[in-house]
Image: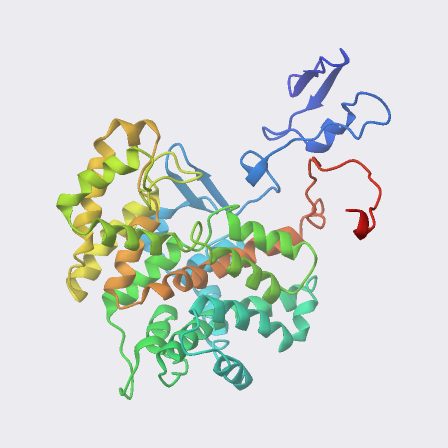
Amino acid sequence: MSQNTLTITDNRTGKSYEIPIKNGTIRALDLRQIKLDENDFGMMTYDPAFTNTASCTSKITFIDGDRGILMYRGYPIEELAEKSTYLETAYLILHGELPTRAQLDDWTWHITHHTFIHESIKKFLDGFHYDAHPMGMLISTVAALSTFYKDAKDIFNADSRRKQTYRLIGKMPTLSAFAYRHSLGMPLVYPDNDLSYTGNFLNMLFKTTEVKYKPNPTLEHALDVLFILHADHEQNCSANAMRSVGSSHVDPYCATAAATAALYGPLHGGANEEVLHMLREIGSVKNVPEYIKHVKAKEKLLMGFGHRVYKNYDPRAKIIKRIAYEVFEVMGRNPLIDIALECERIALEDDYFVSHKLYPNVDFYSGLIYEAMGFPISMFTVLFAIPRTAGWIAQWQELLLDAEQKISRPRQVYLGYDKRSYIPIDHR
């Protein structure tokens, strides 16, 4: 008997089965042979929310939640945040290796020269009410891009995929900035190809009467680091949406719109908004102990603490905490930071939070930085979607090139009625 197998004994029948183990997993379909009789469908696994199910193999992002490790293509997130730029990191995520200088220059040029959007998209944006949520506008306009670039449907053409990658990464900041300006009733600002990726985004957001917008270097760098930290995060809700929708072989714009919609929810990309609402509810540092008591009594939630994957301090949260103080030196100290620090101090010393492995995650401090930079809360999830586009495309491409992948179609455990006869309405 091979050591790389799992022996399962079905106590209902007394039969034993030897299931191969590969990469620490067993194939779900190998369980189908476990049956009561020939008419039995066969054994399935039941895993709500995919808490212990691997839906794919991947070479993009590695997370060890118990040790607080996050790596893109083998590079620790701490090193990338310190030494890389967002566009270089995006290249790494998509291509598997860091670019040479010539490759980075070529990559940057193509991204930069795909920042402009078709003028008809502006008319599309004008159809939204002035107070429409920027995320709703972003989801709609990303999906609308599929009607402008019909070559995007040629998903197994490498040249076509490359072009759509340039377009999506290049245009996401433009669509996001246009949605923001529309919500304020301000004139739209076109991209400035002389600026960096994040500098240009700040230009499209905040330029007013300047002939030439000059982004603050500290804010430009802070946003670049935040974009690196949010570029990918393994098989999260939105990546799963990108892969699931992409498995139908739809174009990448529609798949990205689906991923963006998944990100919209407060349990995913909207979590940092909830942190700010919580900190405002607490009101002051002296109220933190009382709020913590309510959390421990399960009467309230400590937003920004705990994570499905991380059972240690989220490595991204440590980096963001440091970047926060750099932003505060330029924009002024966000008074909510003191409440946040007190929440963290108490929680990290309290046996309840330590025993439950509840540590600060990426959302705990990111909202404080965004607010200090002048972003309204409605833009927070948009600021998540822009950098995550690179990760989504990388996940989508990996799916398409994986011969084992098929259209996503989970099984279910049916618990409804057995067959019954229709009853005429007068007899019900």
